[in-house]
Amino acid sequence: SGKIEDSFQKADTLVVEANVNEANQNDMDKLMKNAFYPETDTIEKHLSKETYELLKAKTNEFNMPSGLINRQKPWFLSLMLSSMELMKLGFDPNLGIDKYFLLKATGKKKILELESLDYQTNLFTGFSDNEQELLLLYTLKDLNIMEQELDKLIRAWTSGDAKGMETILLKSLTEDQRLSTVYEKLIYERNRNMVLKIEEFLKNKGTYFVVVGAGHLV
Image 1 (cartoon, helix red, strand yellow):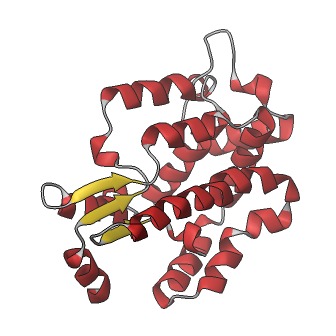
Image 2: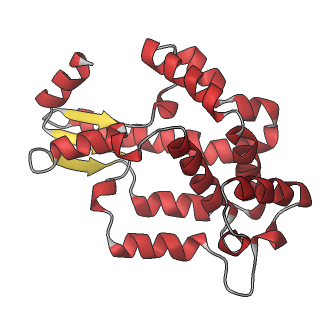
C-alpha cells in the first residue's frame, strides 16, 4: 500500500518484533540447543499416543526420517512443520513484511526490536510439556486445512476485516480451552509488553514505524 510505504519513508526508526537480519551464531546455537532433547531422551516420552501417531503420519508425508524427529522438542517441530507446509504451498519466508522493511531500512534508518530472537526462543522453551504437546497437536491438525484457512486469512487481511481475522486466529482456542495458557503466552502477554514499549516511543521525538504480526493487532 502506498500509505504504508509513505509512512515508512517519513519514519526515522524501524521497529520490528525481532531483527532476524542480525541473528548471529550464538543466537542460532542457543536455538538449536534448546530445540533438541539430550541423547538419552526422545519426543515419544513426552507425547500422548494420539499426538505421537499424528506426528508420525505427518512426518511420513514429508518423508522425514524418524531419526530426525525423535530428539526434536514439540515446540520446534510445530514451527518447522508449519514452515514446511507454507513453503509447500508456495510461500517464501524471504518475502515476509518484517524482512522486506528490514532490507529497506538497513544503513538508512535506526532499527529497534520490541522483543529479540533470544526472547522468542525463551518463550517457546518456557512452555511446559503439556503446553508444547497442545501446540504441536493443533499444528498437526491445522496442517490439513492450512491452505483453505490461509486463503481466508489473506482475504481478511487484505480487506481489513479484523473480526474475520480474529475468528480464524482464535479458532483453536474456541475449540479447546486448554490452549488458553498457550494463547496467553504467545499473544496476550506479548501484546501487553509490546504496548508498553510503543507507549515509550510516543513520548520521544522522531517517528517510529512499527511492524508486528497482524495477529497481535486484532
